Image 1 (tube, rainbow, N blue to C red):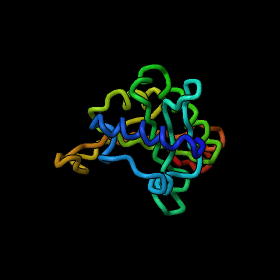
Image 2 (image 1 turned 180 degrees about the vertical axis):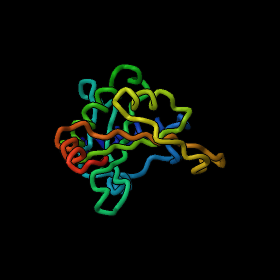
Image 3 (image 1 turned 60 degrees about the vertical axis):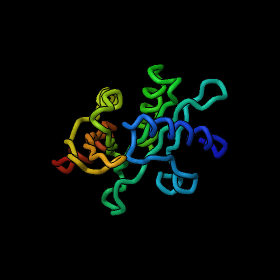
Image 4 (image 1 turned 135 degrees about the vertical axis):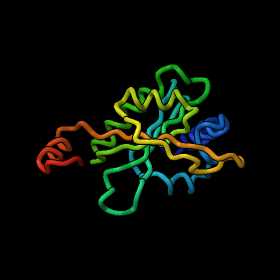
Length: 168
């Protein structure tokens, strides 16, 4: 993602928000808000020729240093490009890039009605951890969120887990 991609990234984010099943937000943030809420890397876009058709980025889930390797994944695809493999490609690239940066756990928080996103996550090894019931309101309606996580299978992280005799 480069700075010139921001208008397209914001428009795709807004399209997702308008489905009602992608975010508690009602409006995509401005650049400073989005930038502050996401890790500096990876920030990815998918292109169809010169047009941005999707984006993926990570957010910190906790400020405590013990959680430095845990991040929340976001993947958004333009309505016209959905079901074309863009989300799958972005998800794979996001996982690869996150592991290269030392991130050992990815989380996704998804509305239960968003079956396509849950199924995508599961295809990439995310498992359902649980459901946060009535965790927040969107347009005056309480919403549940399915929490999924994916632990890295990278040999570096696996060696740490095995050496400790515990999970990560």
